[in-house]
Image (tube, rainbow, N blue to C red; front, side, top):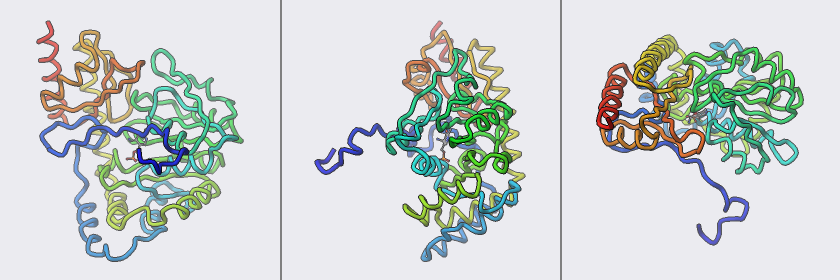
Length: 354
Ligand code: PMP
């Protein structure tokens, strides 16, 4: 730390992203990317736009916002595009949280929530998940605090049904409820259509997972016009050109080719369920995931050891040190061939133990 770093930030514990190795030799099942490439129209749109990089991007993202709002049946004013959904989450924490507006979220969830809360000096409480890693809705119904819930949750993949999400939103009318739907396209139910009914709901989504664009950094928020206007105030006070030209153009092309991405989601869900079955047959305990990853533990091998053994065999999965989940690994669902390699490697590792 330099002697210039202000007290305000010097105690920050930054988010630790998953490993992003530069060599492509790994089967990469550690950061929930899609195993399928962007569609041809997306590649063409990004390449074409590269020729226009001399010019600033459109701060309104008009074309992309128009296409996406039609897809979701909402008004463009109910939509804000951001640099990944991480950015909309940070904007929302900045806009709606402070010492008078504390925040609650589960103890096992997306690791960025504590970081953004600390960054923005928002008091927060982490509510323990139940023993089977589910969210107890009663912890949130009528809580009278701002809430962020990932649905499906990460790294468990477990979803809450929409009627429960609605109950949480309805019972906290004076608090902002953020539903982080980064993984919704793989089997969850979106709360997006509730925005006309509840002015305290913000839904966040991303092109990183279901639309194969993690490297382009494109996310968005859906909410009541007034909430979105507040978030725009934050955006225009930090970085109006938060979406670069290539990403905006690629995003619009991805919406045009939405069927390709939804078919990929279906394939991924199918591969997920098949892989879960195989792991269960090998004695693993898994949560009931409706996301593009599995969350698995075995009583035959420690979670950290399995992570290391898989890495030695060229397969990267995500292991967290958090005490409650340290025996688990989060495994992104890849192609059927990649998952066959995973199963073969796990089988070999378990056989070597016995
Ligand atoms: N929410 C959750 C639950 C996530 O797991 C992630 C991915 N790390 C994000 C949001 C942010 O993803 P992105 O910024 O790529 O949209």
